[in-house]
Length: 584
Ligand code: ATP
Ligand code: MG
Image 1 (cartoon, rainbow, N blue to C red):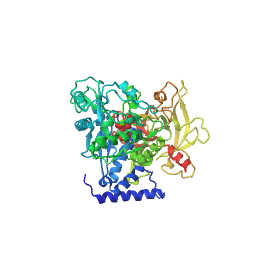
Image 2 (image 1 turned 90 degrees about the vertical axis):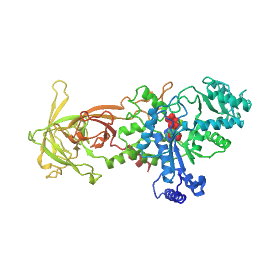
Image 3 (image 1 turned 45 degrees about the vertical axis):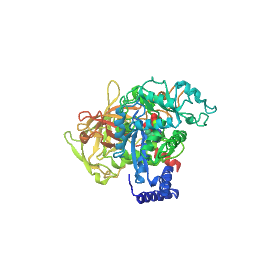
């Protein structure tokens, strides 16, 4: 924990310079009010100049892009100020927690690029300390055992406009409370029979201060502590004290905990222990996306998606399987900034960050999603040419590769129109187009199925003098199509994803309906495409740009050498760029 004070100070000054530059509009870093608070704290030597944060997930589901915002903020601030960030599981509720979640959460945080080193903690590690502190509060007359039922407690609590009433058990003696609390722990009572409550103020304007419950009886095994406990601390009792035990300096959490802060401070004051400083920020909300673990769990349970890592899910594991890079997610989290008021972020910004990153790193290849056979009638029967193709125009070091060209190729069905509309520059009867990396071809004949009238194949001729370059006679050809050689291409299953929810706000539903109503019935379309032969060696998770079609990656679960499966990560069309243009 001992970091050089001067080093931290220097980092704070760097950050301050950055903020100054933002203010003067010299650099484009989005505002982050938490960074400003920390700069100030470090300068004043608050918390001894230390910065120590934590990311505290409840292991009751998979992490989603909203959690990524919190992860980037907590680990990011620690990194920026030479501090530390813990990973702590808030595992106070034994019923909803599963090992699967604990494993996936660690995998996801690591994949995002963060490291908690040896600081992996569990709130359940602190059960004994929390119990001892509760005993201390009982001894000080600041906590009592209540026999009211959960419903009665709710009723006695009052409302925002109406003061609460004191429980008839509120004034039990310290001795009686001590005896009953110990017997609660010893397992003498049934679930729900008694609770331990803090003795604060039933008339407080803040409902959280009206004698909140600290412990409940729950005869349930805990994944980590087994049957050691039959009383479990409530989140509000465990959370602040866990932060205190770990010496957290800046306890960053989302806005809904603002009203809990006085309670957390009260506990810390009564106990006289290290006081972390809680700062609340707005949670991330994204268009076309649900970011509630409860609702995501429902999608999984009701098999409305194919598990937590379905590529349409906003979970980190879903985004990873979809082909997102950790860099793009971190970039997104930086760009949205950190503010004090809730707002909805357009999902096209996330896609924009993704495209920017994929554009730099993805090799370009050719793949035809919906193949239409083209026979080049003047090209020799058995001839095969290996044509040179650049791998990535954005990256000169990416080099080139050879792709086979032959008499029979596939192009996209979409790239041919028998009756082309105006401004359609692709293939049509009598028209010419360029085949990428190859020749100019001209459509001579359309062959149809005698019964259905469907187009079966096209017959074209090619101009041998036009290989990779303009035509020698200078004639202009507007359209350039991607293609694959029919006898060399390999078949692949290609999964085309769209938003899981039709509406920008999935919760905008008619009366009596819920978010499931807005599920997009066309969020997944599967096609059997043909891809260039080099992709036979593609490994799970490899990312490519399919020319003109978008960014794709090899599915990490279902793809095999014999049966390649690609996920469409994102299309090439960038709606965010357009939005930005309009704004500026
Ligand atoms: P949910 O509402 O989906 O159940 P949660 O807040 O209960 O989520 P936790 O596991 O308690 O989930 O979250 C761990 C941390 O991530 C908390 O500090 C929480 O504030 C933060 N977090 C959760 N959702 C978001 C979000 N959408 N944006 C930013 N931070 C979030
Ligand atoms: Mg929570």
